[in-house]
Image 1 (cartoon, rainbow, N blue to C red):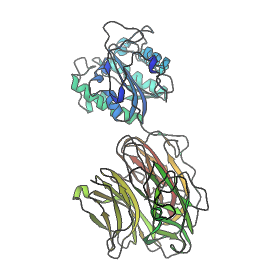
Image 2: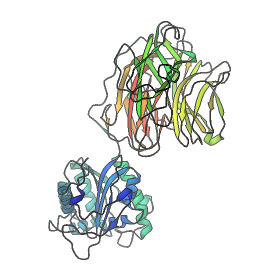
Image 3: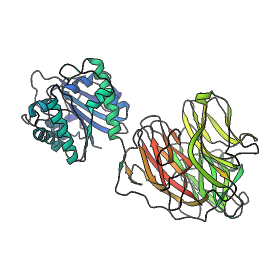
Image 4: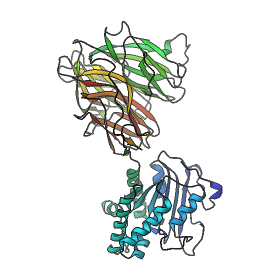
Length: 591
């Protein structure tokens, strides 16, 4: 990210504490009668710095709430906005002319401002000079693009015009230059104008009043964000898939039993476990002989700083993977499925108390149950039916246990959700949620003698339950193969074939398991979304209608999931707001 030398930007009006200033200001030269509007927002946003430049149509984007404010609301920042009457690419102007946007890009860069994203709202004036000549229009567009250079991503809006030949030639030229330059993305303003019913003035260039300009700013900010804040395919289509850590095994549900609770450790005297300290959890006598993996619920509490918890087989190195992301001032709970024999290791990157509950184990032989994955479907949503402290649903016929994602949303106080057989009392937590928030967790829950599964809340909250699979005795389902935790997707780094923000409504597909895999288990992490967001994961093509991870703006949330994959072993993950996404495979399911 390029910094801004504020001492060398005398034309900038400082925006303190997120407030804005709108003013006509002098530039390198000042032509009489030119209306200039500049807005500066200095606050940092997760989508990064952006330059917004344009002509008299963009001047109207300074009406409150302005286009820069709308962009900041969506996660952009810092923002430098400049619009001028008569603005053009500068192709037909003196190089120092006030109306030349090429001149302003060059001048800004000379004094330290060089944003990685540039939004251009320009063309009506150039199009009139080009007079319907597409080649001349393309030369004007290249004139500004050459000054911006190949590095920044440029979003350039198409135009409307009184003369269709002028707008037609200009927009065709934009298409031509965009085909030449991979950093140029086009925003279809003519289509947006019609779709959103934004009124034009008589010249069919400007807008018919303040309200249309304000509406246009909101539409422009959202649609351009959706164009830019997306992950893009990378040359490396897949990450390296891990080798099996054990032979396929069946699942044996267990009555929840506590394996670890550092709050009761007399050696700690109530203090949290130190950051980075690895603890060994003995499993012998608590799981069946021949166990190759365990399913556990992990809760962090009393956390001193944001961080993450890792669990792994003690006979190997700790992986670069998280099972739980910790938060100060609240509890976090998540399931983990990890390869194990007689002992597993756990540690946190920050000081916290750790509570670990056994949900079940995997062992070779014919005594356990096999997974029957399904396309995730919603079985409970109290937002539609009304809140209750306990809700229930029927497990599929003959199921010994179910795989579920449980979400708490809108609670008045902090609390937990527990999932359990209805024939037994609530036990260990599946979800920990803070007042007013939304959080999701997963679990393998025994169905009990009556075949029903209950979810019990400790507080007043809405409860959402998605069923992702069920376990059955017999030979027709899938067995579990544990692997060393392996990162198969990370949009921050391009791992898994996608790089960049996981965009609003964008579906990423990845190869999520090795040959023979029909379902996968792993940790799905949503990283610092720009707004309240959720991820949905299902076999490709994306089914929709369910959620796997729910994350507050700027937070990091990791949730385990067990879900089927397509016949090509592909998993589809969709985000509801821009953020980064990671997926760590901990095992897969096969015949």
